[in-house]
Length: 362
Image (cartoon, rainbow, N blue to C red; front, side, top):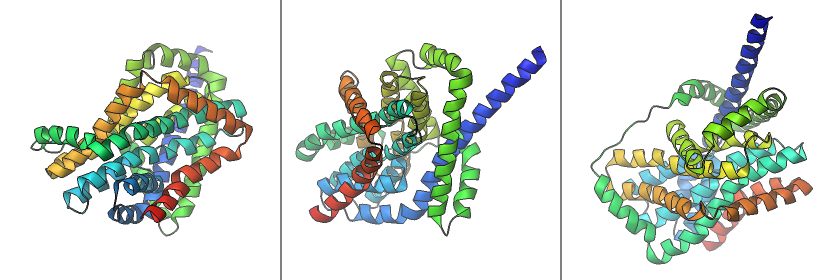
């Protein structure tokens, strides 16, 4: 009997790990499919930036299309290094990229939409990232526009690190996810929209059964483990988000992983918030390494702007966490009452508003 119980436990662990793998794979495939459709568009639209205000919305739109702030900021860094973009125009794009990157975990939260209670928790966990970035932009964009505060701070840091050179971080997740994701994305190369649909189906399938599995089998044990160890303190949760995102080089994966945990009731919004801030800082590593590799002082300055932007936001809004958390809870309650709201939110905030403003302001 004991042997059978051990086998049953091992089988459950294997199933959970397989579902998590499919979940992370689907996120990588969604990003890959969008990049296939939109990388050229993102690069061309970034090049058209003519003023800081439109640069902000170009950053939102470009990142929403390619589903990766790392790709957008790396593109910006390379364009600055090639003298295609100036630093004052590049910085608002990086700010916008911070908002645009939250679209992935917002899409993930929609997978919980059939259960109102579950969806309310999951949607709040995803949009708290949006509200933090929005508040951070409202705080820092005017200071950057009128006083070049980020350019000044980043310029000093860039001078110190200009001769350091780039460093390649080992990404263990890339080893197990990239080959399969690359195969599937390129299988649908001629019809990337089919790849996106297939990836979304995988995402919602894995999401549904991860939550179902955790709630029925291991929710108490996982809840104790997460609350007692990984997310025990604010600092620990922040460092976990920072280190995890630095290693996997994708805030989309790290923040999206927290969404089903919130949906299942394992993690509260108060514990997820510092983890999200840590992932925001961790995601700056990719562009920073790309910039250091170029050796161009202008490119390094832009990369440090991204880092400093998130550091300032963390210092300001971690003590004021009640503001973005309350906003997220309130909006998620509204969204539960009308399930059309989250869909409109994604379409309007990440695509329609940036697109319209780019056209009319230009």
